[in-house]
Image 1 (tube, rainbow, N blue to C red):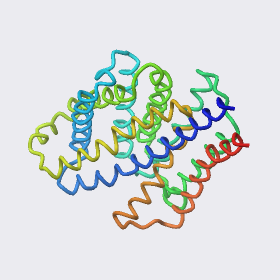
Image 2: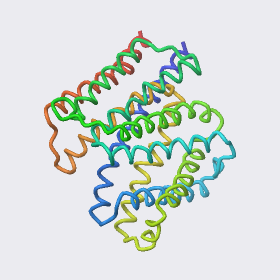
Image 3: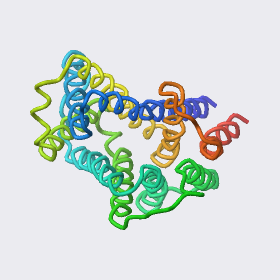
Amino acid sequence: MEETTDSRNGQVIGYAFAVLQAVLYSTMGIFGKLLYATGMDSHEAVILRFMCSTVLLGAFMLIWRKERLISRQRTVYIQAIFYFASAFLYFFAVERMNAGISTVFFYLYPAMVAAINLVVFHERLTVSVAVALVLSIMGLVLISGIIGGELKLDPLGLVFALASALAFAIYTVIIQVTGRTEGSFTVTFTLSWTSLLASCIIFAPSVPTMFALTPYQIGIGCTMALANTILPVVLYIQAVKHIGGTKTSLIGISETPFSLFFAFLILGETIAPMEGVGIVFVIAGIAAITVGPLLQKKE
C-alpha cells in the first residue's frame, strides 16, 4: 500500500510540474513583446535570454554548491544541441509560415516522443495517451486558425517546423536517460551556456548590443531567464523523471491555451470562439492522461 501511495504521489508531483512548466513557458511571448517594444529584435532577445540564464543560474549554483556546475556527460551536450536546434529551427519555421501553422506542426513532438519511446524503450501506448494526443492536436488545429482560413504551407517552412518538433522530441527522450544520472540544475546550466555560445556565434552581429542594455531590458531579460528558461527546464526534467517523456510532452501542449489566456489577461487580446473550443479540446486531452488514471489508482 505504501509503495502504491508513493507511486501515486510521484505521479501527482510529475503532473503538477508538467503543468507549471507549461504555464511558465506560455509567458515567453509577453516578455518578448516587452523587449521588442524597447527596440530589440528577436536575435538580441535570444542572446539576452540565455545570457541572463547563464549568469543567474551560474551564480546560484556557485553559492548553492549542491550540484556540479558543468556536466561532464557527453549525453547532456547532445541533449543541449537538440534543445537549441529546436528553438533555432522553429524560428525559421515562423519566418516562412504563420505562427499558428508552425505551432500545430511543432506540437506534433509528443506523438514523436511516444513513437520513439515505443521503439527504443518499448513503452506501451495506452488508450488514454492516444485519446489525449488526438484531442490535443484537434484543439491546436482549432486554436491555430487553420480551419476556415487560407492554409499556406511553405515546403521549407514545413520542414523546419517538423525538424524543430523532432529535435525537441529527441531532447525530451534524452532527459529520460540523463535525468537518472545528472542533476537538473547541472543540465539546465549546461543547456543555458551552450545555447548562449551558439546564439553568440549564429547571431554575432547582434552581440555588440549587449554592451548597451538599459536596466529595464536587463530586468526583463532576467525575468525571462527565470520564467522561460531556468524554472521551466528544471521542472520539465523533474516531470519527465516522475511521469515519463510522453505524458510530460503531452501536458506541454497546454502552453498554447495558457499563452492565449495570459495575452487576454495582461495584453487585452481577445479570444475567438474557435480558439475557446480549441482550448476545451486541449484541456480534455490533458484530463485524459491525468484525472482518469489518478482516479483509477485511487480506487
